[in-house]
Image 1: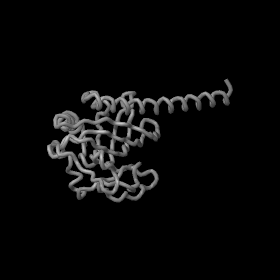
Image 2 (image 1 turned 90 degrees about the horizontal axis):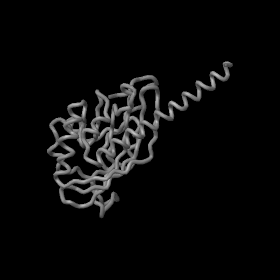
Image 3 (image 1 turned 135 degrees about the vertical axis):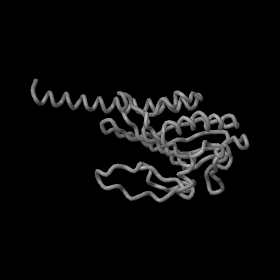
Image 4 (image 1 turned 30 degrees about the vertical axis):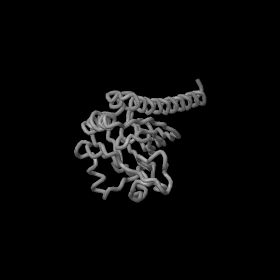
Length: 219
């Protein structure tokens, strides 16, 4: 086999591997959303790496496996018991893979029922996810949800007269979930991929300066 042919084969293998990685990441993210829709909380938790975290913005910071478990087995079921219901529409993924790490930015539109009054509402978020290959499979590693509009009444939409708000059930979230938001003065921090703050109605901190080339991202 000539050097040119060997090089072409190696290049094709790398391209196929990248395509397979991106497809597995899409499948993981869709599988997670399906589990959330079906109230399969253990299946949702299985999508996370062993040392994963989730900065859920105004719904709280989940720094480890214990916090993730309490969120998915306590807070989310409490939302449903209070009369909440949600249907998620996930779109516009931009996925980048770098070896055993990857990042993805998604748009999330949620049609839901506000548990406080039983009325229809909207939620609009940007999902800034980081993935890691763990034991040969892609998993969520560092998730970040930026709430652009949260629980906006369906009839009002998200125009000038609309008002984003937290669900009342959030007051019963497990202790510590919202400590970071309180420390930030009630404001949410953008993610590495979601630097623009244009149009966000949930109070948001100014994006931090870009890190120097080669510098590790802030966790």
